[in-house]
Amino acid sequence: MSSEYGFDLDSLIEEALNEEPARPVPPGLRARLQYRIRVAALSREEKRRFRVRLGATAACIAVALGVAGMAAFALDTGPWLQWNVPGGWGYLDFVAVSAVGPETDAMGLLWVFAALSGCVLSAALLSRPLRAIAS
Image (tube, rainbow, N blue to C red):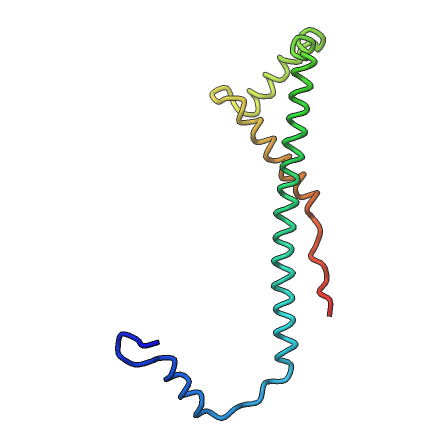
C-alpha cells in the first residue's frame, strides 16, 4: 500500500523485520494468552447473561404490574376500597404529602419506590458471582 509520500509502508516494515534475528518466545506466553482470552470470553458471556436476566426481570415486573392493573380494573376495586377501608385514602394522602412535600406531586414518591424496589429485585435475582476459571 503506497502512502502519500510515495513509499510502501508495508514493504518497509517487512524489510526491517527480516533483518532482525528471530528471538525465542518467552516461556509461558501461550498459557498467559489462553488465560487472557478465556477471561475475556467469560466476561463477555457474563455481560450477555446479565443483559438477558435484566431484560427477563423487567419483563416479569411489567407483566406482574399489568396483571395487577387488569385485575384491579376487572374487579373494580376502587369503590370497594373507598368504602371498605376506613381512612385508607386519607392515610395514603398523608404518606404522599409527608414524604414528598405539599408543593410537589405524589407521583414522585411512587417513581422513587418503584425504582428502589426494581433495584432490590434486580440485585436479588442477578447476584450470582462469576464462575471460576477452569484450568
